Image (tube, rainbow, N blue to C red; front, side, top):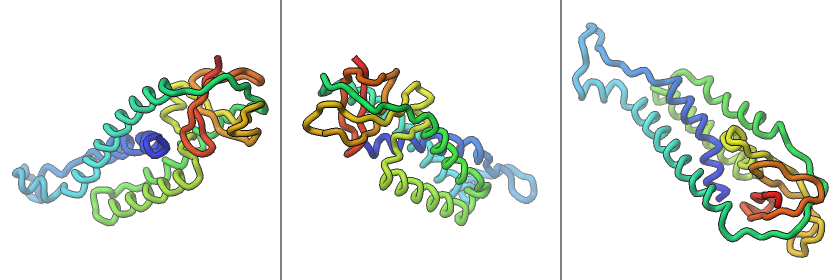
Length: 191
């Protein structure tokens, strides 16, 4: 699920890359319309980049549906939370990280496409290694909140600090249902 939420979190970058770079060469140097082979030759890199972005967005939609199903199955519950605080800036800070690759104007060139690939790869590694996939701008827009919390009396997880993704609100000492997403990140729901 961690990988799927990471793909979902980067889907705005794919969408914005399409919008920003959807300009194909349709005429040659003599201002004549290109035939299909000429069009493909002139726009091959841009077609590949936009195709990857479209596939990324479709995968993100599928993964969101998968996450919606994930949160309803096999939940644990009956434990109260303490030391709960909402992390309101996580999604905003993460979204600003997505803006950096948009400074590239030349994804229709090999150099620009490779630079975008390198930046997206570095962002993916950062997200995966640091558990920042929970700071997901898509989930934030859809109403999810990020909480830092501890369990009060859960013998399996103890009183260590955890991150909770919640559609709605959770208050101090509230009993929750939870499902583990990764080592320190849970989907939580107040009951």
